[in-house]
Each structure stands twice: as structure tokens, then as C-alpha cells.
Image (cartoon, rainbow, N blue to C red):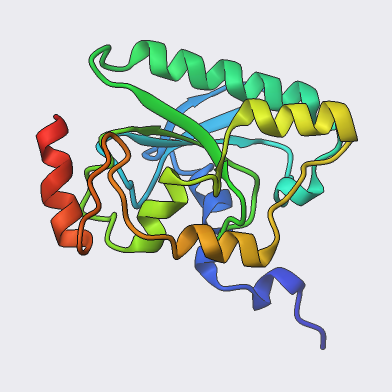
Length: 185
């Protein structure tokens, strides 16, 4: 007897697909995308936009996906418009996501959360590991695919020294950084 491939994957790896069907997680939905609250938000406001069509990750994208990527950007701007106007947000994709199903992050730049615990978490949003939607779309428009960082480049970004994303402060560790970012509120 053969086991289906998705039965071999850890539950968390396919968790976004389950969250897309959870009414408590859904913020907005239309014919093309679903917006959900991140189950482990790394900021005070953290949402994910997922296409309804299964697209594994950035490597699976090609020029036929440009309309959905543009739509995801438009939906992200809509979500930001209905949010608290005193907040600013960052939009992007992780160069190497740990969870399958393409998703764009909409994350408030306070980066204040009990779930933001490690240097890897921090650097995944504050370095060039966090790919801008317009850069992803431009890569597809000009090359037909997304220029992906190498595994080595990803590790360099994720292991880079901690630095405040709003000033030039270099904290000694995550607790120091978490205390520091509160001065920017």
C-alpha cells in the first residue's frame, strides 16, 4: 500500500492550506485569493495572502502567474487601507519559506510580538531575505521566473547580525532588541 506524498509531510508544512478553510482565520477572500491572520504573528498586525490555486512557492512561478501576483499586491494595499492609518506595513515573500503554498506577508513594521523570538525570525523580515512583491513581479516580467537566492545567501541573511530596522542600533541579543524597538512606538 502506498502512502500519499502529502501524508509524509509534517502538519505545519501544509498548515496554510488548512488555515485558508478556517473561518476564524480568514480576514478577506475573493475568487483568486484568501487573506488570513498569521497563526504565529511576528508583529502586532500580520496577515498572509494566499492564492486559491495551489502554487508551491516562488520557484514554481512563471509569466502566467503575473495576474495573480498583481492581484495579491492590490489586495494587500486594500488590507492596509482598512487598517489603522497610524501603522506602516511591509509587504513581501520569504526567499525560502518553511511552509508550502505561495504566500505574501502583510506585516506591520513594529515587529513587536511574543512570537518573534529568534534572530532568524527577525532577519527574515528585515534583510533582503524578505523579497519585495514588485521585485518578484519584475523578475518574472523580464526573465520569466523569479531569481531566487541561493541556500548560502539565505543563510547569510538569516545569520546576519541583529540591527534595528528603524535606526542603526546593534543589539547584543533578541531581548535587547525587543526592548529597543519599543522606543520607536
